[in-house]
Image (cartoon, rainbow, N blue to C red; front, side, top):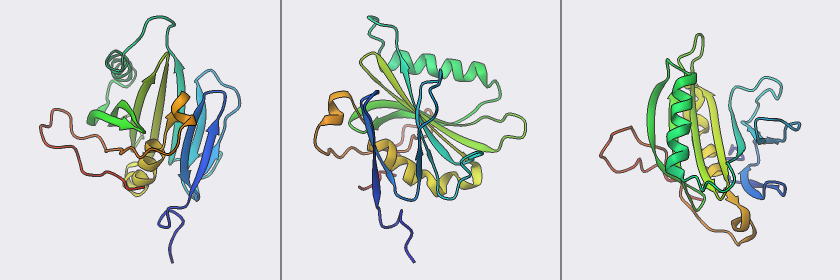
Length: 193
């Protein structure tokens, strides 16, 4: 029997307030939160996840950047990684690299928090569009991470923001970040639409 993910049935998510569009597998659940100060726009829950206590999920957040400062992706990336390392002193960085998010340049890091009792693996990917940063956080227990990574890559790769969200379908290619300092070619984990 084929699962919905294997059949590549995708549903469409649009948020007019943030002017973003995403596609996600039909067996995942899109859940918009109550208004919040964390900039969370939407969460996607993997199949059969408990909506009240999910362990495998992708969050999409918006961070408004200071007006008029024209913060670059490199500047945002440096600050985001510094803050992450300050907040998680036992952080184990598995991979870090430049990526493409939809058609946009982005940056991503995969890490293990190594906090007490935590066995999760986390991917955080981000892009800067004008005065907004869009942040994707994929969280899963280490043993389930790879099982849902392709679905997450498809969701992230479908991202469109602002005027791009109004344009016809483009095909970007999300590539899983490669090991830090590696001089090899990027992992050829490009996902086909």
